[in-house]
Length: 493
Image (tube, rainbow, N blue to C red; front, side, top):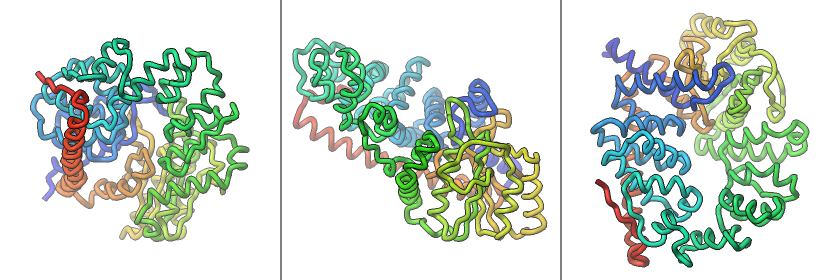
């Protein structure tokens, strides 16, 4: 039987999960960056202090990298906690390298240098597929991490980090390309884009010539980021939109002018559908009759630092739900009929659009909104209350509200009504898992089920870490046989 304390713990954890999924400590439409950071910092301190085991377990959820880094830093500051090591290592493996290096730099600044921290840094660096490439692209960060973990890179890597011009030649191609790029214009095209860009400026190479030469080495995200500016210079980066994450594609589409979207309609629609089909996977067409209320009001603009992010999430969810559903109806607040022409505009009449969506009694209604119902205020809450208590007390129509915006004042994402569960969302690919997680917020399941759910999500982390360690050991053994100087001395103490 669930006690009152268990219910409070369950609610606290769900509240923290919503915050950790949506908030990045940056400015939002209704709150400044300082408010976001203060509110988020309090939540981390509260959950870490009261539920340390569950605090670590949230790393297994689909929280964003900003909060994952905060959790890892807080866990590494405390004494003990060795059982968290595998989960931390697994999460580090899922984070982008720049984010991990920023975390290591933060640990160095904060003086967190215990044995566990040094071991995690050492193992993460040893597991990198090409540490020499990292040393060129993130040289200062790699150098800082190596020093902080008390490592001694042997051979060329150590020389490159601490005395780069001490060698007349490097055998490692990327290190040699970096050395030659100081005097040879051709060598810079063998380097990562961010490094090559600096050398191009130093050599006075025009932007058009540089982009044309470096295009084959661009990553998928770099191709997308540079697509418009490169096209103005007459260079096509050949960005593969369909291969990118769904919200990333949606953000790119919304960044284009209305005329460009109309001209490239077939290409953009196909890319969004392909990304949605990949995200839906085996669930395609299995969700039955689904309706969605999608927020494209003025507040969906987000903020200058998260430009159109809420609207991008809504557009991505629209395409994903269309792929998941057997029958689908998407209702935009602006009553626009063309999702590709969505733009932030007008008030937020959620109540009337929820009535429209419920009119056909779908199997599932998904509301994607920041929750600021204001046309008129409170109508959505009243509609949902009457629906749940009077018209559908048995809950035949499942209703879930997903919110991409963290409300700093409420320490949670803004809710429409206590009658329906609300979950924070950042990436559309997480929508199926969030619909599943939302059942905990309805009160139909309790703390025991929630703990089991977290344990189930964390189980693959242990398996992944074991597999990664085995692969790393085999790779290191092969490297040692081929080039003994490639070894990294592991000095921890």
